[in-house]
Image (cartoon, rainbow, N blue to C red; front, side, top):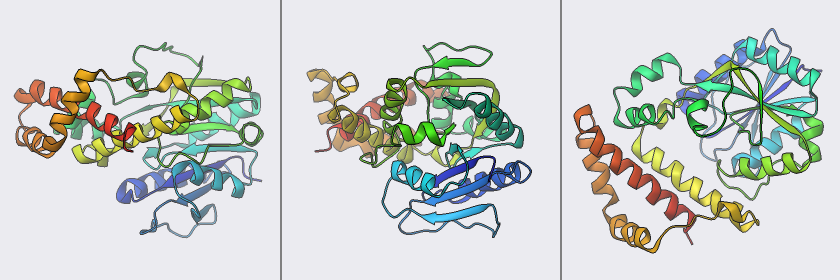
Length: 303
């Protein structure tokens, strides 16, 4: 039996996925792990060198939630590690996770994440990358800004599936991910609520770091589509009865959004026109903030 089953959903990530699967393979070879790649694309197949520890599957359904669930049905280990297709993991990461689950089989674990060094350098040359750096969106600690952060392992009420480890028993007891979610986003919110309701604990280990290589997302169109999808999944979570995630927008802001929506491509053009000169970042960041809120709103109210 494998020490752990690493489940990686992927969809049209090209070289980003290529680098992630190579890192996962190198990490897993000496750990006795298996890797299950679930392809969620209906048009492309990821290129994977033949290897007896990697299983490539095509998702018979659609969406990251169903891809993860499908991977679990194939998993041979009692321990599961869900990994995003842009995460670079190491052998020491996997060894730590297995050791943790052996000691705490009824708990879930997130490892810390940061941008790799080369992506930090690339980000400084890109207006959206500089936006991420300005608002500390290049690390898990930054994304959790305003929430408690400690220098040693600590308990939280919500984890995320970019690098989430748990036992198959815990996963099955809460019946996996809700497949009504078509995109990544608030499927994690709903999943966490069921983990908490079942009295399982979630931990973050800040000293074990994986690298988040989302270099293809330093693109304004991709970033806004990501926010639109987040709005879609947020609305689904709300419709499932999670009233606390309702997106409340003032009438004045709704009016502003209605006015600027037809001009969004012009706003994109303005941001990109001045993107190479950091002197214009203050103005560009204001537009990025405005567009981010706009696309979340449009996703939430897509019907």
